[in-house]
Length: 133
Image (cartoon, rainbow, N blue to C red; front, side, top):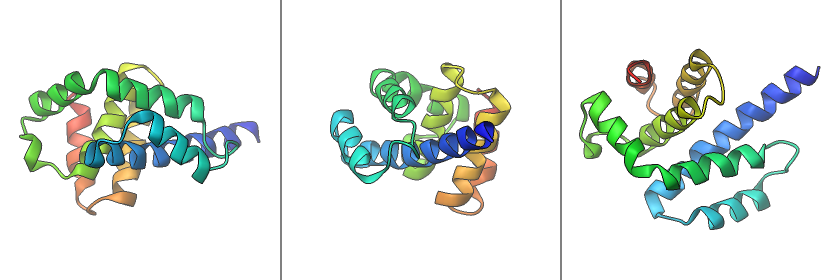
């Protein structure tokens, strides 16, 4: 039972993180503001805010390197990628770089997030892109 609860928290945390990363990329909202906002909107027993903060801080700290990875590995210009897809790729790269979950789990979760938040066909791009990292 504990594993299922942990899994549900991890799933919800990733969903909230994609929204937070998207907000940061779109509005350039500082991570502290985003963290405060999402803490008001979500219950701590449903979202792992320690992991949330860690990923958000990593995005801010490594933003240039992450964007370089996206443009180099995917051979795509920044303006050619949907912002929500970029947010999902950022999350995937952060989780892989910090070994937060096995690579296959990260890719599967990013595909699931893409199917939930993005264009129905974008999951193919996300899968191929993360597979190159």
